[in-house]
Length: 253
View 1 (cartoon, rainbow, N blue to C red):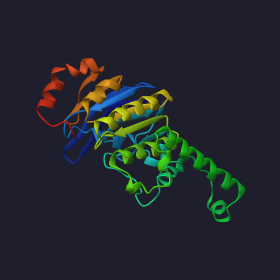
View 2: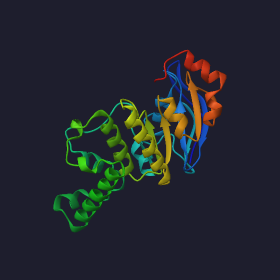
View 3: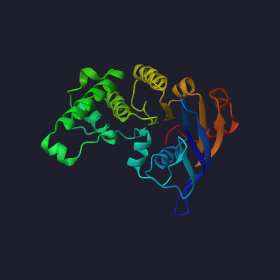
C-alpha cells in the first residue's frame, strides 16, 4: 500500500530523515515509533505532502506521490490527523466532519449559489456520510455540540472521524492517544482495529508503547532521523538498539 525508498529530508545541514525505507502492507496496522526528535511527524509530513523530500521516493497504491500537494495526496486516499488538535472549534461536531468530505464533493460554485437539486442531493449525502463517521466512533449524540466544548479525548476522536469521512484507503494517526486516560486509550485501540477491519490501512505514531505493541502488525523505529529497527512487536521490544534509544530519551516527539 505504501512504500518509502531511501527518503531523506534535509533542512540546511540538518537531516530530519535520512535514507528511510520501509513498506506498509495493505490492511495492516503499522507503527512508527522513536524517541524525541526521531523524525516521526516529519516523515508523516513527507508522506502527506506537507514537505517534499530532499531525495528518495514515496509510493502509494502503485503511484509515486512525493512532490504532490497535500490535497492531491488526500484525493488519492491518504487521510491524517495531527500531533496538535486541528479542529474548527467554533463549528459543530457534525460541521467539522463534513469538512472531511471536501475531497470527493463535486458541487460547482454556481450549483451552490443557486442550490440546484444535484447540489442538495450531494449535501444530504455528505450529511449522512458524516453522521456515519460519527456513529462509527460513538460521537453521533454530540453532533450538534461545538467542537471546542468537547473533552480533549473526544476532540481526538473527532479528528479521526473527520479523516474517515474523506473515504481513505490509508489513515495516518499522529499521536491519537495523547491526553487520553486509560479507559479512552482502550476504546481508541478498539476503534483503530475497527478501522483496520473496514479495510483501511493504519499508519500510527504513538507514545504509548503498550498500545503500539498490542495492536500493530509491524513497527519501524526511527532515531535521529534514521531507521534503526523494523519488524514485529516482539522483535522490536527486545531489540538492543531500540532499548538503547529509549533509555537515552523520552518517548515523545
